Image (cartoon, rainbow, N blue to C red; front, side, top):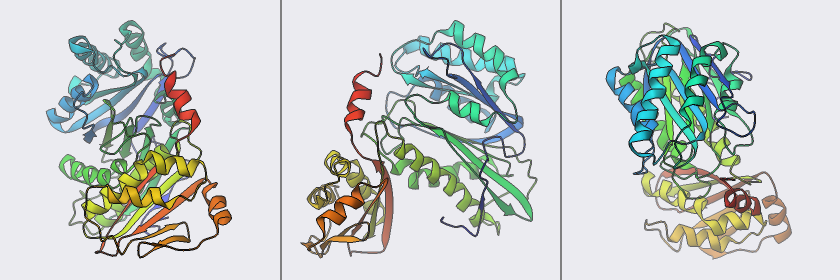
Length: 408
């Protein structure tokens, strides 16, 4: 575990572990099965908030509504989410429906509309069945509870196979502070956000502006460093809510415990990002690509993301084929200059290329390594001091099967 000394992982922690938070989920009829499809996180006080959003130009209506809420005062008290329908590319009706969700959430929880955020995930281009949604929102307060973190996780899933949650604690000014997160995402995942929704809660006392800067920083190194299939969704969003109920001295970069808090915050983002990559549609393994000694962080990140996003690299990993030629080809097309005579590549601890020249390696041993649940690819450019890591998954027959019949 990175930065293990500065924070502690809470094994059973959820988004309700930080002081002041409750959560829950229920089935309102958006999904054909009886699985939860509507959920909420609620804070007993208005929480300082921050968010990051998809770069897809066709941004879904709920994202714009949530941005409006946060911009109004930098705070949220309730965050509503539905799965089964993305409310994206739905025109003015979609905008009206997202605002109706926000208004209904405000009435249900007894808070001002500007303190409510909304988001949706699921099929693009279909109007929400608002009768079902509004009826479900009326029932949400009774479903929201201290023990409701797992129910909330279930409510946000679409093609995900597993829930994704993590919680850590860190000491700030002698007080215990918690940072927790939950996320969904398994397909239409690509850097610059992905078809993913992320929700982070903390009881730290931290102003919205500082929270936003921190979220931007960790997004660049975690959520923006994952890919499953190269598609960036219309609905991607990560929202953070900070209750302040740990009652620590307000956190800023000048605070002596800022680094510890930032490390815990980054760890939560990294765990969620890797869980999304590992749960890619049809995936059998997590692939981690580390690029070392690049001449800039921008170059390192771009090259790592290009390798992890290569369909040929992903297919080779699925087939346990140590075809390093696909890796070096991806490095060369990433859009950043490299010294073509100095590149090293390893699969785990197996060197396959040294100084851009092939080396003999045990093919059977390499194939056995690639059959594992974690494949680590190392690319050393020998150009500078910048490093970056990206995460993805293999490309399997099941990915095509799942997405060929997504709407049915």
